[in-house]
Length: 139
Image (cartoon, rainbow, N blue to C red):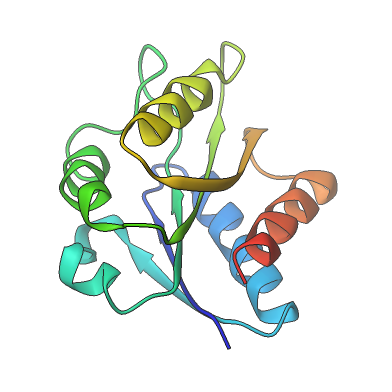
């Protein structure tokens, strides 16, 4: 059975709702999902998991949240090896281009990206299903 960390930061609750849907997909596929706030995750915790889903909304000018999420992510990404990794998050304006930047950065760092998912604002039923599918891809 796969043990998957769902690590996220959420300012409005939209990305948190996505994290819940990702965890549901992991559990429905038979995996174990631990939902963890970005402030409580580090490289030592990453070693405990078979796969990791990282969730962060677009901030400012199409960037990751800079105070909590990005420093954690930058500190952890070099220790992930060949673990399956998925990226997800919400956005409010623009077109979600930050996910393209984030995925390029992750792949450039050698991460094994198996799925990404974005949604505008709060996840509707279709976006929640995409999140669940993303979670299932990690199991």
